[in-house]
Image: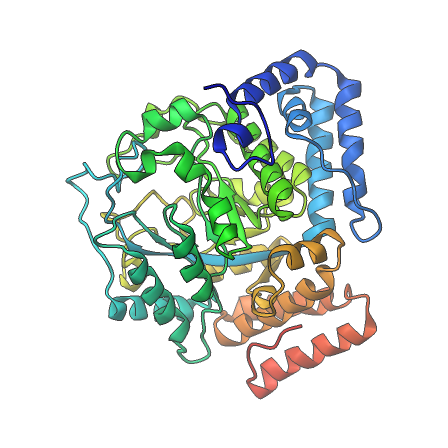
Length: 483
């Protein structure tokens, strides 16, 4: 059966259409040296530099693919500069911090790039009890974290939806000293509309599901057995999540499995599809790359991306999907993350451990890790580093807790109004962190940063409110103040 490209279709073979992607790549090859076209495409993006005043047209996956294929140094420099400027226009210099929490590594799938695959007999299998989850969450709260992304393998026996829901309830219930987890994002396997409704009722933050690869034939090869082997079921999951009431969803591919140009086109097409069908694009886009892990050698996958091209991909995602939050994890080194922050990344993990039960262990355990962690700094080290880079470390969850999600968040973000909320909230939550958890040096330079950043709050009333909230945090012990 043949399929034609249709971004409004609910069939994966039509909204991620192989023929359309191949034609897009051929079009990009034919036009990559047309510098006038490349600059014209970039010009279309410039209204996004002023989101409060004018809505710029989104460039298409085809136009973005031309820019990706272009090798001209001048165009590439313009791409990175524009990406930096658009990121500043939408998100400013705030960087949201989070941590992953691995609940279970039991899995029935056979994904060839993941050490949790069912045939791996070397990895110790472990599933946290609710008491163990409490201990992990207290350890994370004692670092200063407010936002978690929970992770679990797909196993109907060991990790049913009831276990995920109970774990979410446990996480939200824990208040240790001044600590609290205020947003729980969930990264679990594709499931049914009814189970997505359950996650929504349990107050999920963002539902995150990485596509891994949009190349259907490659997908089948990489997922030989297990429920995840059904490409369409997996690829159509975000539509079911939206139907189930979850309006914040997060996309991502695992770069290195297949051709990065194919994956990039597919990723942008998926964002276009969500906009076309639901009126709401992805809340976040993640950009993981294949990394070493137990039983996994990344050299087996011959589609690795050099750092320079990886940074260009990040920049082009920011230009093409300007409103989305962009996430880079501790898979990447400090140096790579530092450069990526310039070109569009707005969320990073800090102090992460990718093993089940890893946060309560004194030494970093490796036997149950999903992947090697390249950036092994503590959360305070990461906060201190961000401050040195003139970024504002943010622990804000205000939009989620105030109901500014889905189309409500997007309307604020696309009009530039989100900065009237996010910047002050970031400063208040940074004051919380500095007061409760920071080392003395981080404390001092953090509050110096807050003083500088307060001057950027243009609305005098909001600036005064922000100063009052920070004073209440520091001097009165108040917490969870938000705009």
